Length: 179
Image (tube, rainbow, N blue to C red; front, side, top):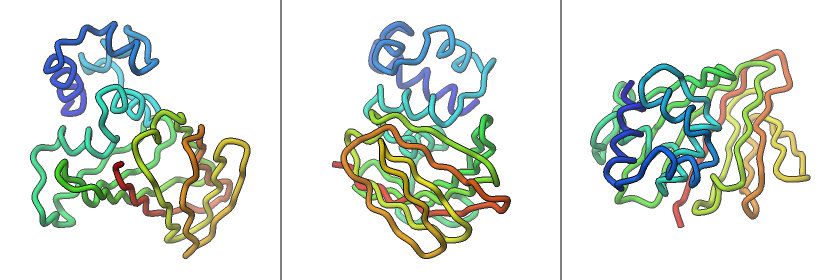
């Protein structure tokens, strides 16, 4: 509900209608309304689109929903969010609106796939560092599989899929630099 409330606050703070957010995000007006009322749980892809409409990263949206961030973020205070579609667990390790770097830790279940639209990368640069397991990234027409310790810097914005094509969970860290 905190994310739903935050989405509504972001929309109202800008004086936008549901239609305005729908147009900017590419998410159906009815879906946005259901999310704001707590009747639907958004997927990661939908949240990324909505955050982008407000010129926020997903991490910034989640951090705003969780409250003000401090310079020191204790492990126990790092917000967690589970994607209802894929089951992936996202830990917002560090994010502050006055800092250009964001760090996220993701646990991607076996067999899970999460797609992100190119628009979600338009104002950021991103690096993925695999901690455990194997991660397959489909970035536009390029496909790469990363193992533990491998690190990949993203290219120009492209539709991207994060996939765990194995029978074991995959854990990776995403480092985001806002431009």
